[in-house]
Length: 88
Image (cartoon, rainbow, N blue to C red; front, side, top):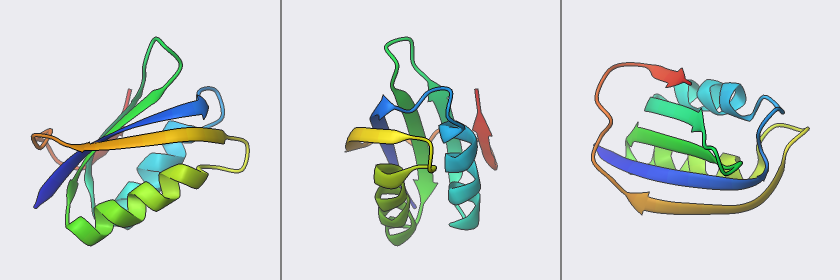
């Protein structure tokens, strides 16, 4: 199991980005969370297989139809713990 922290910038708050990321992560069998940051970005931390994390990263670049993604950064991190995928 691997874990990654993604920071997504652009028009990603107020457009159902976190809820859509949660749906995508669950479909890929990932655990973790997505949350809004005060600076307008969305933080996504996920744990699972490397191929599922790669697939999530590809989706994060697109996001839901109403989003506009300008950048996605990724770094390895400690697994967030817990089960499922939550939003906050």
